[in-house]
Image (cartoon, rainbow, N blue to C red):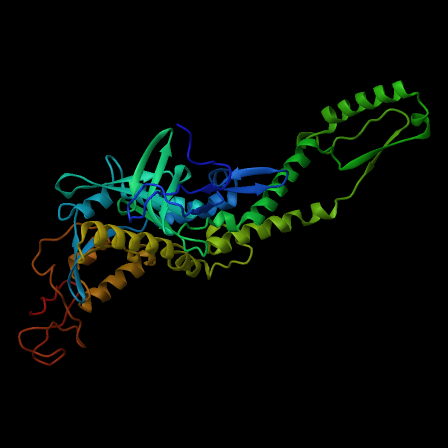
Length: 440
């Protein structure tokens, strides 16, 4: 069976025949996927997957976002009121179980990387949802490189995926398509397409430097011939030039031979040559390339180890920016796609939703974390057991650990009919005294 796509060039969508939301038959309206490769100098093209595998700054940006993403837990909740909710555990709901174990022996980190990684590289990701017996949910990651949309009236009606010759069709209601917005249609644009010129220049700079080390004689130089050498007959001159070229490549070529003194036969002279303008600007150009990668992926440069203009005082602030401004938007994209397409569309449950919990990764050091939790418990924002769970400590069965407390003017407890801080109605709290819970 022929492949439905060309991994080295633009891909055209299959045309479905009849119109329907999940109709996978052919129609006359085309849908363009755009490019899936980057054009490089010398009529060379490289796929987006190969760009990630070979370009260090692209790999650093993508892996930085992925390693941060797997630290942010995805949790499932049920709304219990306008401003209240309860956490759903794997035993409470099929979706809560699926995001913890998306497939057999799979983990939540696998699911997040599988949904987010292709978006960062290709601008799109596909995740098939299989609803089995007892409403059990299983996720199946699809390879974007082997996927083409089936389109009806400029809307995606489904997908055809051909992986290793095994073709399958997926209706649009059974697959989560996460994509960046694009003015060209429903298919997202890869950040690597936007970095096309940058990657072209960076690849040329890398190849230039590699060739310089591989082929260049040290020091950078030119060999000049005297009139005696030119006066040789043609056969002798050609033979001597060929032998000389081989000797120079063997004796002086490559980085391991840098600095060797030259020994030439009579009639030839070795003259050093200064660096060209291209070589002088090469390092600065490569610095521009890495900053453009940071700009497209919206990552603060210090988070990729670029410390040219960083100070120790702003590293922590830029770390928080990396989570809130760089990582949060794509994770919200994944989160809302699950809520809209899977929860409300497939499961038809308006009171259930998933949400990424950034509280843990945005906390400061251990002392600040404990102080913040203590303030939250004293302000009735959480119970002591909820605070312990944030610190990954086991629940306590002691009385009052699941109740709310309020810190009064005099470290007072609320209850027993008294007002906060009122003399005669409050008990001072000491380090070895646990406040009684507030009366309901």
